[in-house]
Structures are given as structure tokens and as C-alpha cells.
Length: 158
Length: 161
Image (cartoon, rainbow over all chains, first blue to last red; front, side):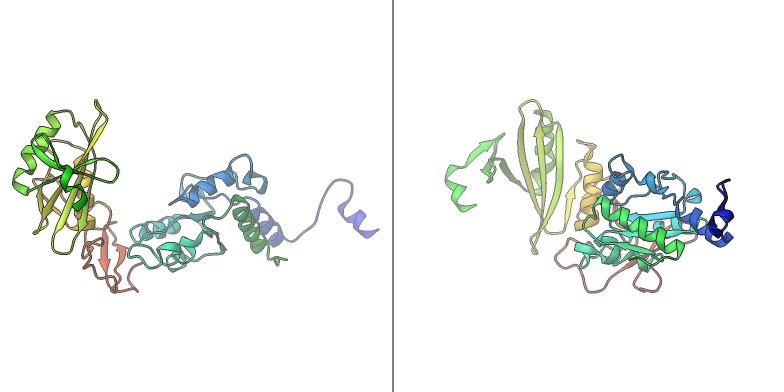
């Protein structure tokens, strides 16, 4: 029983520093308080009691980009808003992650043939996880968050 | 509008037709527009609900919905303009300020006498008015921000978004 002697009865787990960092980062993803359109309502539902994203360590929506790790782009990114989105992203400290939430953010959605909407926020900032839907349900966004956590820990999503 | 011609009545000395929802629609020329709006304001139409524009290709129709809170009555005022200029009603209803700026932004209607007639939604440098029938949808415009935080508009997709 080599494992028992290693962890011991003191509750000590040995791991690599790298793994510990990943574990810590993935379980304290603090999103930026930032909503652009109707998807933001679903994002608020994720933070509220029924879905309760705080179970995954993301309960604190920071009001400043300088204290946030995660940007959930929730809602249509208009061309006028795109430079502001870029600026907010640039103000976030590394390591930083982006979830693109909803059809508008992924490729323009119903406004794809319009004049005023950016056809995908990945033209503005690099995106880690895409959550499709119009709007995505809170459960879908939670799944996106868990997918991002797995991505940070280097796990495959099966 | 042909079928409502026979039941024409007058409202405050102007002939009106009834819309599908039962609202009085009054067509005004540009000359009689501002004095009549003033009379409406004085007779209790204290709330200007909305201002919209309709591009009829040959001319532009500016539509005003006025609501009287005391009698719960809504009248619709329509003004035709060929040179896309109409007098501003900001002197009567101050809520007309942003409505008129929006119509200027989207339809290119110039409201004469408006205190601050500039774009409200699109960036200042945007070319054209998107809700006009002759707006060029085939050449996309992109927006970027300069170092001072001011927006600028470009046709180069590599420079903006």
C-alpha cells in the first residue's frame, strides 16, 4: 500500500507545481461583469441561485477588467462596441480566457447580413470556448465553463 | 387610404383619416407643421411618443405619434419632405432631442433648429444613413479607436472591426 504511506493520515497530496497552478486557476475563474445584449440575461441566470456558477469557483463577477480572469462575451458585438471589447480584453491581466456566448458572438447570428455587427468576436479577441445557442441556456454556459476548466487543466473533453 | 376617403372628418381644423388601429392620421405640409404642433401641445398632447421616418424613394415621410395623457388619445402626424428637411420640435417637446438625432442618424433627416444634431448610435465618421433605400450595403465599413479613444471609420477590414 505505497499510496497510503505517501498521502498519509495528515491529508497531504503530492503533485507537480504546474498541476497545482492549473487546478487553482481553473477553479477560480472570475468573470468580468460585462454583458452586451440578451445573452447577458442568461449569463446573470448562471450566476443566480438556480444554476449557481459559484459551485465551480466563478461566483465573483468582477467590476474591473484588471481583476478578472475570464471574459464572457455575452451578446451582439456591434462595430462600435468592438474597439471597447478589445480595450477591455487588453486591460485584463494574464492568464486570461474568453468564452464566446451565443450565435451573434460566434458569427454574427441573425445580424450576419446587416451593416453594424461584427461577424464573430474572434476577429477582435482570441476565443477559447464557443457556446452556441440563441441564447444558450444557463446549463449550456455552465458546460462551456466546465469545458474551459478542462482546457486549462489540459484534460480532454469526453 | 382610398376606402377611408368617404368618412373624412376634421380634427382641430385639419382633415384626418383613420388608421387600421383607429388612430387619427393627419397629413401636414411643412409650412403648417410647426404652428399646428404648437396647437396640439397646448391642447393637451403633452407626450411625444416617437418620431420615425419612412423612405418612400421620391420623398421622405416623417411620422410623429403624439399622446394626450389626460384623454388617452393618440394622433399620428405625417409630414412629407422632398429635401429631407423638417423643422425641429425640440422647442415644444424636449424628448424630441434624441428621437430626432436617431432619425438623423438612421434616415438622414435634417431637423432644422435642433440644438445638437449629430449621430447618436453610429460613429461620427460613418458614411451614409443605413435605413435609406439607397444605402450601399455592399461596401462594409469598419470602426476602430485611435489612441485618444475616439472612434474612426474605415473601409479597410484590416484596420478595424
